Amino acid sequence: MSGLREKILSTASDLFQTQGINSTGVDTIVATAGTTKMTLYKYFSSKELLILEVLKEGHQDFQTWLNDKLNANARHPAEKLQKLFDYIEEWITAPEFNGIGFIKASAEFPKEDNPVHILSAEQSMQFQEYIKQLAKEANIQDADGLSLQLSLLFKGAAQAEQMKRGSDAIKYAKTAAKILIDGSLTR
Image (cartoon, rainbow, N blue to C red; front, top):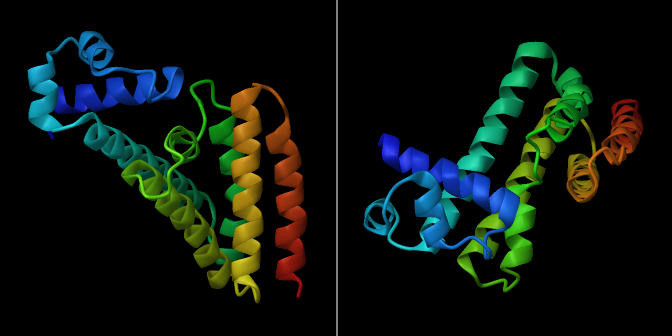
């Protein structure tokens, strides 16, 4: 990937997370990245395509990070499920945490037929499917139900922490997740 393309993506990601997507114009992105509109449009033919790429990259980075953490620190499927919220807590409480891209983007693009909203909804479902796969591997009988419950806890805690740093929402979500997971593993 081109260094300049990566710089534009990184700059746009930072600005979208801290200032909002709709509040961040192309002029601000190119000025902050130290480039030109012509260069930005060389790599991304529209702001919408830039937004979609930022969302894809951010989601992939998070999934890769979480996968790597779980694979390095858990041997058995049930253990991965049990450690899931340990790493979610680590991510949410990190100083650089600014919220979940797909939640923020769907709020800024609420029309369900908008490509940004569509991708946001897909990423939300992908994360829920990821949890469902962990639950299935751990032989959870109601993997669908558990994955929905855990994804709701994750999204709610992340949203609460985005709104007020140090809210402790993730600690309560983690406690609730442990109860749900332990209850599902003993059935």
